[in-house]
Image (cartoon, rainbow, N blue to C red; front, side, top):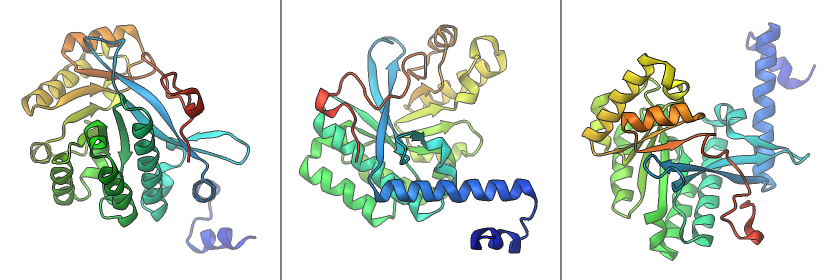
Length: 277
């Protein structure tokens, strides 16, 4: 028996399911650690469209991906929960930010959102990457959107508020990701003053035939409008859902109906067909 498996047993995780989960998590952490060490990371880009001009992206979201040694591209959902609380989570945020700033420099017409955890706010390397890029080209801030999940923002609301206020003065916008998933205090939402809220996809999928989700989404749209924030719907996958959301007054939409995440977007020059580390 390996040392890791022995440690799992000592921790009391002797049933097969617990062992399998622990082994999966350990493998995910090792995969991320190796990929970062060997610069096997890239962004996949997904458009966020305006509801009034759906064929015209308002911005793109840059979603972090890593590659295993066989060349298989691994999406963040397969590893982010396992590394979120670890220093690897901070390094993932550093990589995503560096790749995002790089593509903003290469494509001057692009506006891009990049995900981050509130836990990275005080991470020195993350701050150095951002501030060095802004010193070299202050206009990058006007085209950068930082997305913070609702769950992450609630971990340290006072620090997040101060962080946002400082960077908004430099032109950077902020989006609250997965809004409505159940963590946000509306008092905090008022104080945060995000520029964009992205309504969680659990409310959006099949909204055209779910009157409860439509009522909830309309309430969230009204709330965003009250606080002068743009409302974006996540996981829009059908024409029927897109039509329903447009009728409800949504500002923007994101989902497979408008474009899947791709590491080779057509708007990148051929020599930059995949932005990677």
